[in-house]
Length: 209
Image (cartoon, rainbow, N blue to C red; front, side):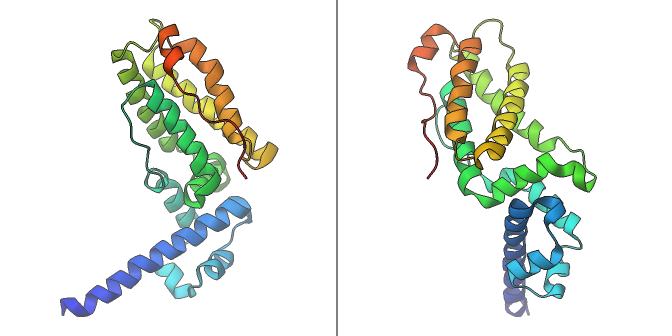
């Protein structure tokens, strides 16, 4: 009996992935308020039954996309410390420009009050990832004495979130690499030792094509 059920399971997994990606594309394009189940079904090319087997509502789809944010992006490799922290934000910038799944999850996290949610989990997860890099930077002697790793991790999440929202409004994120570079140019003066600043590479400037 097992061989007969495996294809159904595989199809179910594939259908769920197709629906989730279609939902992300629609949420990214229209936002939560402008998205609809019919638009998502049309984009996914699935029947109503196929849709509701996996997700019972637009809200359920939005929550699934938002909750999967950490799964939609793979962090770049490298030795932990300030350089890797900079590289992570540069990678996030690239993903926001090119990865619709990640981009939609970020947009929904920003717009979540529209669907009655007030969940800072995604922000807290990024703050923790940043804090880990800052703790490593402390061990490497890259941070000024008065920098609190956890406090600055929260500041960086807030600063980068605001930067990408501003960039979205100003240029649909085309200028986000330049804005990210500028952000670090100022932030490093506040947290990094002069010796560390001499060796750190800022994100590449320029805009996306």
